[in-house]
Image (cartoon, rainbow, N blue to C red; front, side, top):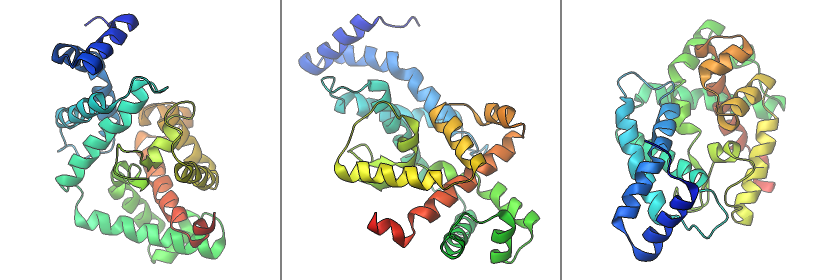
Length: 260
């Protein structure tokens, strides 16, 4: 379908918001529907094959509709920026509702996260894989196998709300912080403080982790494309992404953040 001209889109927003036109709302949904497919495709990375991408698109449509109803065109925010986080939030909420991550995988993710937190506090730096394996009492091969198993947990973990209210009502997520540095709500002082806290935590990550997060969330590259840039396999990039998420969660749980 041909893209609706910008002026026509502005007219549709007026028809929908001022006059309550259902026809205008339907046309806006059609125009912005590709956003849902885009977000669903990115969330689908690393998920089990049992999760159908068509289902993710269906979940995301509810987020798009909610974004249309709550968006204020008078604010200096691009609708796409506003909508993407709500679409993603809708998909993540539904994934949580169906409890798609096995308990054993969740337990391993928490175990690794606690180990990262303990070693961070002790070493005052990000631990190496060998140090982490020793702390857990396992071999490096076993550690890599754990990373592989919990790789898709990071999809939800990276979008957990860490400040503000309910998702979609001024809340801040890790993904939101990296995703758009140039636009979006400025938020409250608390949100700005959280952004600074996250920026500092990200700066303390290893170079590969920072590169993967930047390319994936800021440059919107796929894991396969990032693998080509780094010269590693897609599964390896997925593992690096997982490690970055776990390390960030561990860093944000450190007592020192309470005084920032």
